[in-house]
Structure formats: structure tokens, C-alpha cells
Length: 179
Ligand SMILES: [Zn+2]
Image (cartoon, rainbow, N blue to C red; front, top):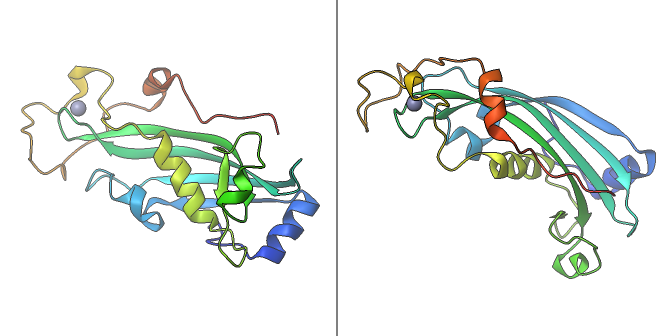
């Protein structure tokens, strides 16, 4: 399990050492991700890796990679669609909004708490949510549940296709910048 939060002194230490953390993430522990998953489908488990380093602006840099598959709800048939998750983003951890002005790319940043704590799992969850489609659909209309009616429970949903078939649809992953 990936750490939920990292205190300021530990963050500084991890960045100075260029340390890495890795662990699994269960969708059940990511409430905002869990809320958009298909009911009754097996919950997704994601593999996460976080690499810490010191940034050019002297703020800690957190490189986040997350991979796995989540059962999203197809907006055509309300069945589960196995959606590949592939996050790769590099964030600069800054102590406040003002500090983002000092960054070359203020959008690739994560705000620390007033006491310098990094809410790591929240940051990872934000990045996962940012990559999920607003209206996921089965790649092939024939994979939609036969006779599905809007509003019907998706409890009986089956995952019809391996995610590899859907990977080509995604022509995008997280952004990776050059820090
Ligand atoms: Zn469908």
C-alpha cells in the first residue's frame, strides 16, 4: 500500500536521497476513483511507483507512475468496461500557491499542507482521475451488453474484452516533462 501522506522532513530526506516508493493501490482506498467504478465488477488494483528527487527550483520533485486496469461504467450499456490506467507525471511539491510562480511549469505542481506534509495518495488519486475519460464506452459496440437498458443495475456486468484491445484507443497517457 502506498503511503497516504509524507511528512515534510521525510519528504526532504526522500528527495535528497533520490529515493523511490512503490506499492499497490486498491480502488477501495481511493474513494473518488471508487465512486466511478462499475458496481459488481472486481475492483481494480493498481501498481504505483513514486520517485523523489530534488528539483531545479530546490523544491522536491515527485514522479508518479501508476499502471493497472479499472472497471469503468460504459455510458452506452452501463456494463463494466476494463479501462487501462497508465499515469506518468512529474510534479513539483510546493509549499503554497505563491511558490508556483517560481516554477517553469506551474501546472505540474502539487501543493503541500501548511506544515509541509505531502498528501501522496490524494495526489496520486488526482492524477488517476485526470486520465479517466468522462464518458467511457466499449471500444466495439458489439461488446455492449445485449438488451441493456439505461438505468438498469450494472451488477451483472461482465468485462468482455481484454484491455489490450482498448489500449490503442487511448492514444494518450500522462504527460512527462523534462525535469
Ligand atoms: Zn457498452
